[in-house]
Length: 341
Image 1: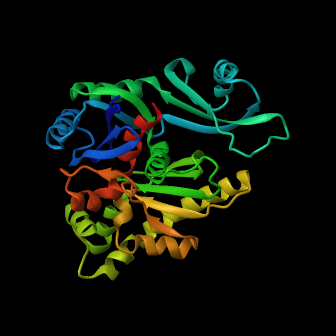
Image 2: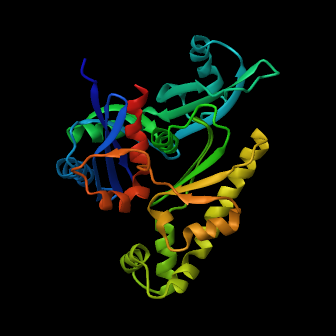
């Protein structure tokens, strides 16, 4: 019998850029068979659809089946403690529980839930931990329609933060009973996603409204230059890196304060500390960004390479892939859903 081959494209529709990664599974092996990145305006729907089409045409992708994701204030994520019950009972009960946490009418939402009990954990109270996700139906429909308008076949709609853990799992072969707690911090253009994972289970997520654009704004104000000049300086670095670091330091301080508050909440709720932090996203590539995190958090900090444990097709420019790797973490995690089919 021939091994079954299947491909999926993870399509990350960011605020200012669209990223895509194609993973192909051939038997037990998973290979990177395509990737791409294109910058697009946030408020121009036609340009975004056109950008997706250009990306798919130029990226050498094999399939038009995609997994994409949503984020923002219209997505509600809660970790609940509920009376222990079967999965079928949980599906029936979750709508009643969701009414306590979802700030908009449930008939306008799509709800999903999953138990998140960890191996080895024994409940003494007869309760179980449940992950609840609710999203405005209109947001999902608009998101899916954009993908369809670009001529693609939307297969799954996920959530940005969860994709980070999936990316780590697919290329590191994480065992379910892994005990270390890792915080994934993905710094995008307009927001930062935090996902705290133990083994293969997400235990905490948060979206923070600080991102790469805030760094650009700070550089523009501090150096008295245009926004476009500041953006170029941020990306390319400067002959005066110290001045650049001074400009962005207050924003890094705001971001790390919010992340520390998140860690404090997580650690109080779970009686576990975060052991290490993995950074990704374009904003995390700022000069001295990682050093700032190491100084502030006093934990092991590393830049997340979502391709580290994956095979790469011989037709792909490995150097270009590696250079863009931190910005492609969400896209890899979305495409990794092919391994959970």
